[in-house]
Length: 582
Image 1 (tube, one colour):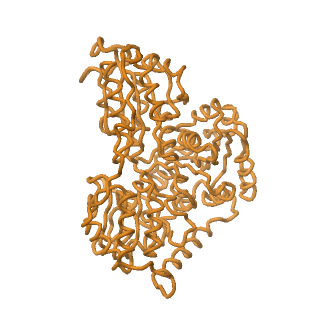
Image 2: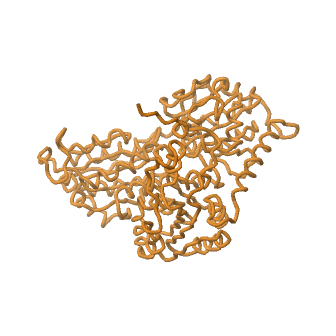
Image 3: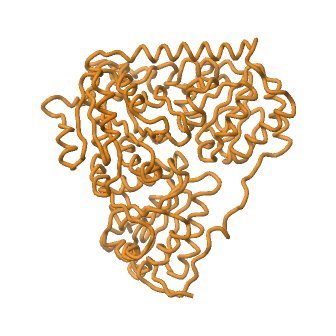
């Protein structure tokens, strides 16, 4: 057996896992770990903030389906990852995060950057609620087994981040160890659904007159796009994904009808709320997706009969009662359902099919409503800016977005045509996510164009990661739609309390950032600002064709609430009446 240090064990195990990149920032608590990567095939990427490291790994996993490894030092370097790790956890995105920890003989002594007042070396308690598992390795000989378990947990079942706390002396200690083969510790199959439940669900779908299929993020994680499309085409059922499943079916497919929920399409909400059978696959039914569970707005379950498929039994029936609940992998179960339905009925045609005709009419009406927003007014709407982004971007290009008005417009209005080409934070709704996630997405898909559409407020949260892309020459395109402030929240405050109660500072001429100068200061190779919409497509085409990072600021309307999403559903937070002070 070879004699290896803890850092070397980690490096060699990552190689066996096929991990391409280790992303993080060096610190005194990670020097022994990092030194081992001087002789490793794993490339080290250095962002400018540990939150950016986690978002970068997140974007990589969403675009590739494979995990990346993150490393940090002890103390604030470790705590800086929390927002990024929580973002990944809520959306079930795999990664393994290595953090430095006190030397084992100094645990509880309050050494530099130790959290010790509740328990010695207590940072794992911070990570516990936002990871699938958190390990502390107090002996170098246990490290290989812990690594195997960490990756096994991260990528199997419902994926998610896993944390490994590695004391500084364990990183540097040496032991005679064998590096385990990951293939020997993985299940070689995916769990299918119970045959009786599959038969019951297939009966419901075969007899349904108005079925809808609602794929969630679990379908994207399970790579179930072919299965979803095959089943939809057999039933001629409209596909109404969640935003985490955007791209599961091409958005120019005749059965795609947009999305349900607060910022869903009119077509998606109407068809979902009037379905007799709803097949939800890997879907959480969140508040934004369901119009805060208001009956008949986005869904009405019951009387709609719900078939709920998920690999996590905690999600089945959590927010709506099920007619049939099926525990299993989205790809396997959807294939089982397709086979079951195919045994019961022939593929449904489109001729003399009133339901299919309704689907086409409702989608055409929605498309017309979206296109009405693509005017050449100055300043332009975010919708108009996105129309130019779509025109300039390759069909298989990746679009990335963070929380706020750009995301609220991109997700429902920006068409994508392939799986894993929409990278957007979901349930944690994290500002600044896309700045770094786009770098990870480009590392995962180096042959495809990648554009991050950011609001100015969101961009400022993680703008330092532009320097990471420049340093490593990663060809990412940033498009900052500048409406001079945090306008999603400003509009919410106005709607609830009126203009005179707004506590939300706008970024005016005196306080706003000159984003062009900022990008130039980061040494971005292509930088421009666009005001007139007729100039935007040409500018973006040049930016996307530039070999290296590019940055385009687009000036959009600052005060029109409709510069963000088209509101078609409901959301409790937007509708709550203010409480009168007594």
